[in-house]
View (cartoon, rainbow, N blue to C red):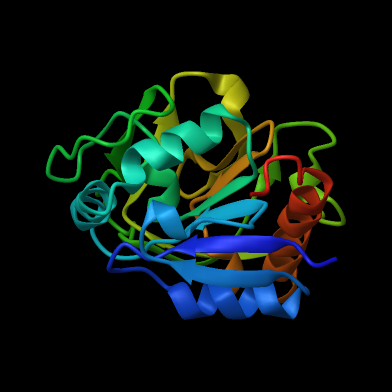
Length: 214
């Protein structure tokens, strides 16, 4: 049975790209605009592009802020992408936006330096910091590359939350994971076969954890 996964539409985000990626790995995605539509699913995805303030405002306006917090607290499979990672923390330097506060930490901007381009845009590696993570199944921590486009990155207070790190004139957190929660700063849906592998791994985790489906 294919994993049933809801994709949150809060008024912005790369919804169709994420939907197409999930379809390619054999999942059954559906786009939802309010928490009451999140039924008969095993997984939840929060995509995001643009400004974090608009993302968080959209989540609060659609009542997804508390819903996401409860979903993660119940350890149901969750995946955040780009702003979907940054929104999980307490606060961002980007216009001093208050995040959802699900994980302690902050979001900071890359420091501008001569010869150092911001945003960080293009392909880069992601070094695995958690051993044997199911989210990283069939991926090479040293060689596989993923697509980034961002000026800000998360700094978790708990180092054990860090799944991968990436070096861009300094090491930063490029993804986090805890239990059934994964969030990536890079865009798996833009990262070709390696990114699809991440969506496939997430779908597999959803299939293994269907006890909450309703």
